[in-house]
Image 1 (cartoon, rainbow, N blue to C red):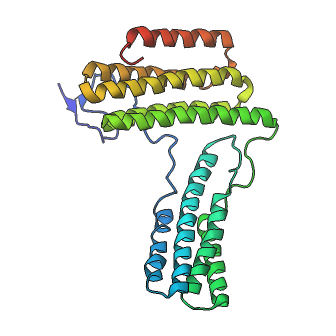
Image 2 (spheres, rainbow, N blue to C red):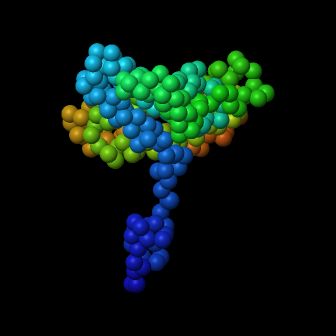
Image 3 (cartoon, helix red, strand yellow):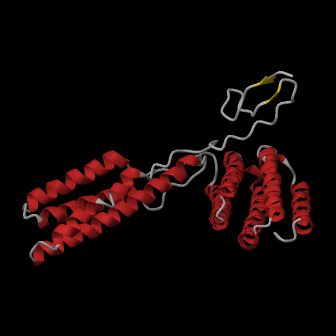
Length: 300
């Protein structure tokens, strides 16, 4: 029987199969919801430039050395604040409802950049005027390159501050569970499992965005997120502790099946969760916990 040539990178995205074979399900896009990481090469270079001042400081007289070491410390602190500010802005932009960063890290980073460059100018005996001009130009270029921090809250129109804070706390709690899962699975030393956890995190974050867009039933949603994700985190930690020593294939299969069930649940419930009543939700949570207890005892 004739067989069509195909493969993983063929236009239909499937492996070779007979013309009468039924197509398989489309795999989820592993890049869905992903954004380029902006805290990359540019911010990392900020940690290299201060080393020039540090090296030159030890070639100067005592006063010049003091200015050089001050420049080194101020510029390193500026680089760290800038990188953290970029990460905070990325998290802000990914959420529908978000508070502005409590500390404008990038703006503080620009100020410290200017002070550090001014101290470096004083080390070079350029005089205070040249040093100040050097610092002002450096701070301006920093703001031009990295931009200021978000200075206003987002998505809070028509929502009282108390409800907004509850939404933010619920999402922060859920993100902490996902972060703990990601950190734990690294100990397994298995890239396929790391990718699997990341795919589950993507499905969970779709639910977070739904809650941020319609926080009307936040009490039930928060309980749902905390119980499900807490169970997923605990299962991941215990699985890694067991799998790192045994490399048990059944344990791995059970863990992947658990992630598949949870991922399907999150994806299917992302729109319907807030409309469901809390009684049905409690039943689902209890059923899930009982299933985890009896079907995967080595995970929970």
